Length: 268
Length: 310
Image 1 (cartoon, rainbow over the protein chains, first blue to last red):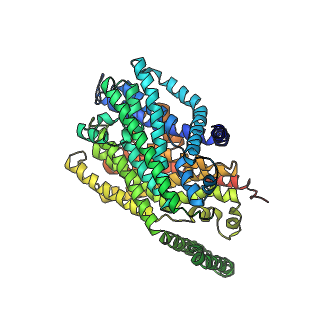
Image 2: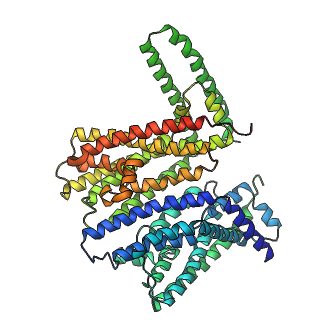
Image 3: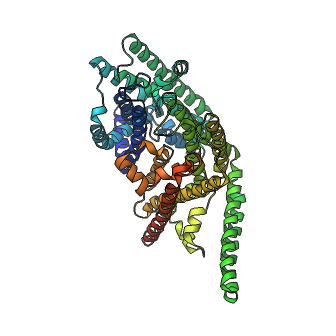
């Protein structure tokens, strides 16, 4: 296990060189966030006082977007999928085939170190931003919600990582994976609740979405935090989320094993 | 190996053609009047640009399936923005005074402007930091043409033209729907359409100037690529209806970084003509200002250039 500890350590040091990039990304990322909050405020004002959209008050709506930003900072894959695809394409994975290191665990360590660094860099600006909007920021209704939120966030991170990893495995078969990654990302962006909370969609559409893994990549932990998934719903949601994590872990392993058989170490 | 071999003779052919031009011009211009001299300069730049186009077409033809897939990716994101608006208008009739199909027009206009900007400038702006980092800018500086011209227009993204067409089609449909639902009382007249396209060009100039200015940061720090991609977040607010914003945020994104003007004003000319004239003047003034600032930034940055590894 000690070797993976080293990987983690090196990963953090590597990522620290990108600290200004991370900071720029966070600060630039706040601009569309502010914009979308403005748009919702205007919509709520147009509807009169104590208006609701779906089940959301203005404060809940703003909290939703703030929580999305937090969960995203905690769980989003940064450039892991590109790097994995590049490793395969450039033949860099050959060295891992010879060493007693499991490539998936190795990448998981790097993913984790990336998140740690990202959070270290963005925690302060993000916290300041939320502080400015504190009158709109609601707290979880009870301790169960908060605790389950953390469990769910960890599973979200795993799910994000394993889906990206599985996607990057395409590099064994096709030369250019970036378009595929972007196409998946587009679906993920809308169906995981990045743009708007999924429960303001028409009921039928929302139910269909919940048969896909997308809501568990972002929307679910936020809904847990806000107390929208509680009791039996919460338990069921966590179980389904765990299922998707296991599923994509299996897909990632399977794709790797198949890919390795085809792999010819171009340029490696 | 394969993609390189047909490319190599082509590019050397290019270089010789450009130098031919360059050596040809001073001789002919010495004898001719100032007017033909001016014309000769324009035709020369046109022929250079035509050569750059030919190069870009050849490049795109090498990766045909990739070319098509990128069009699909862009279309998906466009659809995504439209569905966001669709969901918003499930729960409201108006954002400020903007109605549903008016906002669809706005998003179409924003996408049209962004795609055309992307077609002509985006790759070149993002590549500038790479040119500086590797020192390849040396070769462009040595060419007997305006360096900003060749840096800004080197590559053309042909797929973006396809997506710009989709944006226009969406706008036409939205216009039809806006008329059918009485969100607008009359179809735009020819003069409005003309104004729209002129203002789109003005908007493209603003996007280009600002992003080029951001890209020149690469002369100061090597890691400018992240900053350049950060500009993508600004496209996000360009497609939001201006009336949603207030206070400092609105002031900054109107007068410092005029994102709230770039696509709102052209869209206003079509769907809210009554208030659009003063906005058009402001947009025009801001584009001149942005271009002047970016030219100043470019010259200041270029003076710092020391090339790489030498």
